[in-house]
Image (tube, rainbow, N blue to C red; front, side):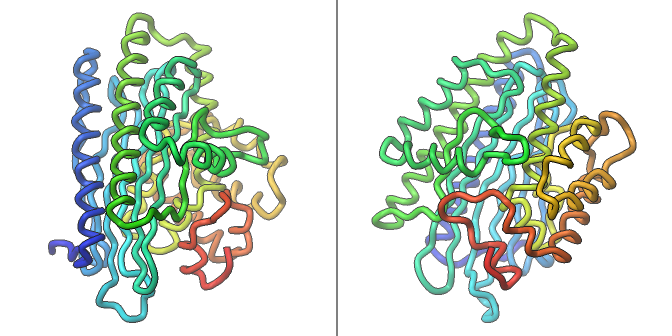
Length: 351
């Protein structure tokens, strides 16, 4: 069955935007890898929301190659225009995470989404953050400059909100080195909002491609050292920890439906350090410790387990079970000044 997409003109324009960003980013990632002598392709995988009745999506995915350890570019549109019981008309998004194989190449996370309720105005969520295991200040500046040019009037607020959202209290540090985040953002009119979303999306994707090309040109001249690989594994473990214990978007996606668990957890890195992950338990709020226990139980019994598709499914099930049993733990998740309403709406409680 073909997915039934939203009829709303605004949702259609948002969907066209995120699809164009997906196509351009995939082409760029494949081109940069080819030019570096590390060819690696993405494959497209479709998923359906309740058989396509309420939309669905498509993710471009790659793994375990010479350039990318994990890479996912997810585009989706879920719509409930003909379901009177739902207050949501549609939600349209691109969410992408790229974890390069080489430790000296930074990961990136980019999210652009438009949510349209049946009553009231729609709003945007715009995110872009650079996540190196080994920071190269020149590359951080390259990425930051692109976002600054795309949204100069919003940059200060976006950086402040990003720094708040990506802070990991248990570890006393941030995930990533540069954060751009606007939550429930609106402009004077929809066309202005669409233009800003396009500018931010294009700046983040093209800026990362420039950073990646620079990093690969430097990295391919020298094989990674053992120390660099350890640093990458430690950082991937931190990324994994933040996504599964703090990230509201990930949790909301898993709680709302189970049609795209592998896509939602496409942000997870290829491997984690089990011992390091377990060591953070004592630093967590007591209410979150059972969540980490469930995450550890879902991982294979290895020192550096691979986060494969079977593991992702176990992790998705573990997070759903935990938050359904302990919805109060949602209060411990990451917050910006304006927390997204998705989880609260789903569980019928204040998040």
